[in-house]
Image (tube, rainbow, N blue to C red; front, side, top):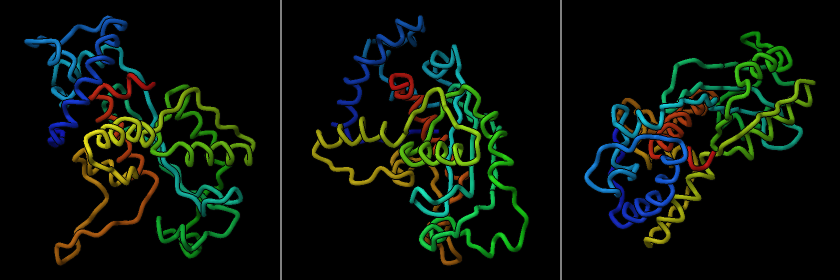
Amino acid sequence: MNIPAFRTQTFQKLQERYLRTVSPLYLSESFTFPRKENDREQCCCFRCPCLNTSLEKNFTKHPHRAVVVDIETTGTSHSDQIIQIGAVEVIGSLITGNCFDVTVKPTVPINPMATSVHGICEAHYRRECFPALKDVFDEFNAFVGSSLVVCHNTGFDVKFLKLEGERVGLPFTPQSILCTMKLFRSIFVTTERESGNVLKKSNLDFVSEYFGLKNRLASDQFGVQRPTYHSAISDAMLTAKVYCTMHRLGMAHVHH
């Protein structure tokens, strides 16, 4: 995976910022610096965005487990419920392929606005039989375990998971969480603004495109790209790719 070229001014400011943050991290974790000609190249995470680089090997010297989670719901109010949970396991900065993917039957109606996002409607549940959330939530908690929980907008996903856990009597209590959306805003939006550029978006599609990752756009028979419906597992996988990119750039380590 290659990171697309960023604007030169932004690139340089990010280099300087991470020169200050990544160097102490290396020393505190006893990592070995990649063999480079100067300190800037040693510490510059943008020089080593690919899997087979020295930086990647050093940062995964003590790999940790993260679970990247996304949900789909019947709506956005407190009375709405989860209808899909998708979770993707990441070790270090590698997606392992170990996933949790489930669609559950809610006890409240699905808001048409929510259907326009994920494509799931009442008729969906008349065609197939789906479990109740209480029957699978314990399995989800076991999949997460004590790992870092990563979401793109923890304010929505984690809030709903906690509310739903309380509703079914199986509390969701992650030991640590990381929001890739907040992380993107705190680093790239601020730095781009300093360079005179304004990033007005930080949603998952925009961030994945910013990093040069494949998003959920699909081409129709005329070759025109159109957005497909969201699903919890596809969004979790896309978020996992964003997280791994940030991990390889040194960001996720600094902000754990």
